[in-house]
Length: 207
Image (tube, rainbow, N blue to C red; front, side):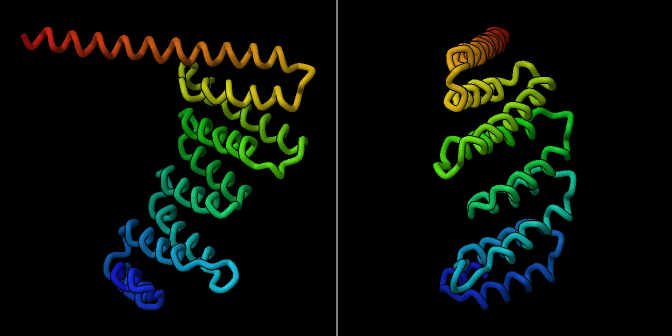
């Protein structure tokens, strides 16, 4: 299948991957391989194959519904082709697999920040909405772990974006952002010191 893919033979690559899947239908890697083929040959005008790629990526989700990474694979594919609402829906499904863990909330917030930061076509209302949604997700992440450094960093970044659309409150928002950044740096430095001390203690014991 990979060989036919490299030969620009869509039908051949699809045929052989489907034969492999028939032989080993429980292997997620085969569905990802088939999805990669569809994505490689996808042309939105001449040969639209995104739906087939999404369908192939979704099979491992059905096989492993408790694995958030499987959901994120689908989200990443949607995001690559600019389907923001679908991206966020799949990230929410990934988050809800482990609702007690902060990572899923944090990841959603990073996508909101990226959208606000990089999409020049957003109007002010959309920017404000996405910033608020991202901050809400970060608050949920920090409720679960108030020393989650990456969540603190992104709260700092989103507050800075909020300052741009709320200039009257800009100084206060920047000051708040600075506080979150300082907390993140302090926690990161403390963790680095603790790790270094643990390494030194282990080396001392081996003497």
